[in-house]
Length: 432
Ligand SMILES: [Zn+2]
Image (cartoon, rainbow, N blue to C red; front, top):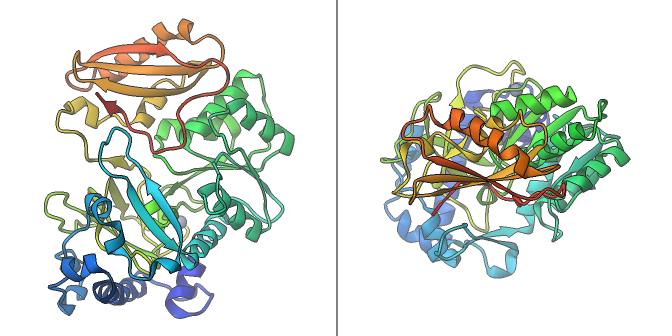
């Protein structure tokens, strides 16, 4: 497992995986947690108050550590500079995150140059599961700045000896298809929705043979029907990646054996917790993912509430890696108060799964209107979308109705120009 070697190097200052065990990782992580908590308490005005009762007994076990208070996105929004542990001169990049539908302040996350370099290294190691030197990798990722996600992946791939090809406007599916064919890409990287749209257009154009051997679905959640559809259409291996800006983009990626994403355990400590109390739950249970960064010097995050519901898989991976694995089934847990029950069971990726059988379906965007209790879905298609709408409505009615209190469903025509309009973001079903 390519992530084992860098993890081992972090823990033992030695680039071999010989002898790396879950116990080594646990002991090392608890030492790092102590170091980073004391560092943050001494250097940041937020943590000096937040961790004022810090006591070394909390590093004795994972359960004891979970008694520390959690950090919220709201606290970062309110006082971002109070999180800084270095001078502003040491900050090489500021990422500003705005939440759609929120009127609150944007969230600002700070990175030092070392931390940006670490992300490039993670992309290099993580991509070794999917590509090798000499391969061509088509990445459907924006790269408007040298330190944007697409540019960092490009640097990681170059370090690996692979050739990166970027489509910086992943909504332009026709452009993705022409790049795929022109470069005979061995590997495709993008959000599940963008890769699915590419596969659908590729099929619609009558293509049969593909050069693609592996696919990495990143940034946003994916559903099993979509992963299976892509794997079957291209006869390729489909990997998933989990990460968020707050974790320095890289987080977890699955190995060649498939299920579950190995965590980058030497950079990040992940807890699955009871969302109410913050208590750590046993591996195997679903709960809110809470993250502590283990090496960040500029803006460390300690017990940061991600708002994502996730699960650590308990069975060992066939690859033998001791790095714990996240289930790929990750969804947002914080919903507005007026969210109906059926809504909680339906992430946007599940709607994609329900519409897969429509031949010219490319992508969709859904929103829920509380009054008149209606789910509205805008369908982007190749060809004329309006002819598909009755079939889409019927599929969704069958899909949504088994969930309680099904709303009215209204499908609307979106674009039909082989350019979709979902953007590069973690999708949500907005509530209006
Ligand atoms: Zn594995």
